[in-house]
Image 1 (cartoon, rainbow, N blue to C red):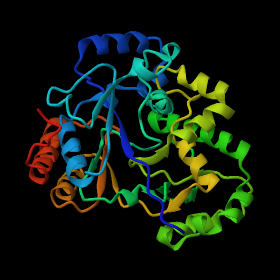
Image 2 (cartoon, rainbow, N blue to C red):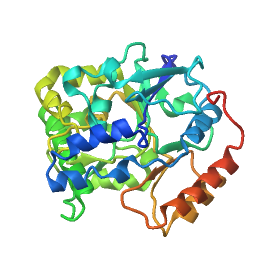
Image 3 (spheres, helix red, strand yellow):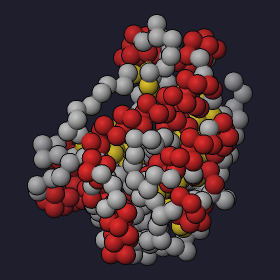
Image 4 (cartoon, helix red, strand yellow):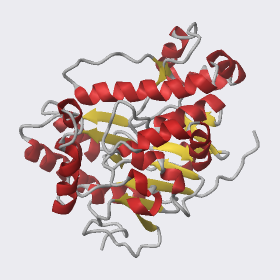
Length: 343
């Protein structure tokens, strides 16, 4: 294939300041209207601050210096350390791009599924979360090659989750909703026949066995979902909104996570099914932070064992403050110098 120069690559980075009392009161007001099960799946643990956002910016500057702009998406909060006059920083308020009928929102799906509406953001962008941290230098071609997203097309099944885990249960419903859309517009066997070597690719290693074991299914069940920053195209968001405006409108009106949500994965899946991607295996590492693994996480950070890590907190931690300090000390050891994004 002829090498094609990529369009500029931007970052979409949403963040919330959970310490803001005005935001908390507004959130609590709407949360009171939720039934108990939905309230637990939107618990405060999802909004706790680890006070390490500045290390994410240090990671971007050192490991991804080729990024054109960082579109920092917030309710209106600005971190005290952030240099808002930096030429690569674009502050985006929710009300700047999310239709007013969907606001206020505390739902990441709404914030992300409307990303294509941001004026000035490049066609090629990386959808980040504030719990994902670059640790090693990555070339632009890790995310985009020949103007195609770089991703992995690996099938998996959706397994029902225990009833006592409301967060996982809600996410299972969201994955199912995403797949209803995908299977409505794409025929699995046609997709895989047309783009055979993108689906059955040795770059996926042993994970390829998942796709092989599911080859006899007529429909897609689900796909591997690395909890990592994903390469996205604004035009694909626009395509999905064009064919499913009512479905996405209903989902975007959910102020909190809901069983009727769709999330940004439906756009990623669409890119895979169109064959608009370059096969590669994710090299990042996902951690669900716990009392049992936080020292391993700290060691991973300090020695940059992976190109990126995601630190997800699904449950309340009894010694959260100690764990937070241990992890942040490792970030400080890895990134001791302030970035130009800091005041």
